[in-house]
Image 1 (spheres, rainbow, N blue to C red):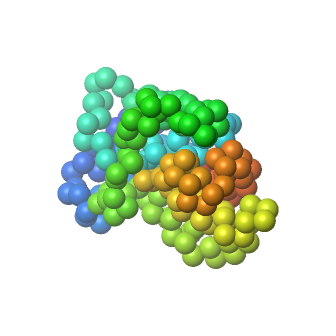
Image 2 (image 1 turned 90 degrees about the vertical axis):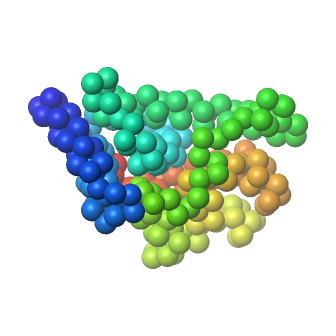
Length: 208
């Protein structure tokens, strides 16, 4: 069973690469590929606050680097697992540093480069899950995102934070300065209120 799934994913990657960037066929193949990977059960899963965010970055990485995949070296999910786990470590490290050094970030942290920090919003192959998530967050059809906010701060809603943390995400320290609200407060609210809503949406779309 596992071999069949791995072979199917390799075939979907090859099929996707046949179509030019920005083409409708490529976008459809990417959508099919991401859903197949998510539903295969072979991608690394863990119940941590940063997992949903790391997963979004992994889908983006897949779409930007799909031509670099080498089937002779690893399965599709093993290839993505390496990136996903690295992003999880980076996000955990970033949050830990911000919570412990909110007043004075260390120099080496200031100089760290985010691999997707300057990525434009309109990437030709933006993953369907990100495009759909952004559309959902912007439209907020049920009104649950705009109605959920930090206590005493109706301007800092789930809608605002989700949109700002979607790739290319705004760093927590920049949001802290912009909203004059501590990183710990923003991150805690995001994990407790925004992440469950993101997970619910992802499950409804078949991505989780």
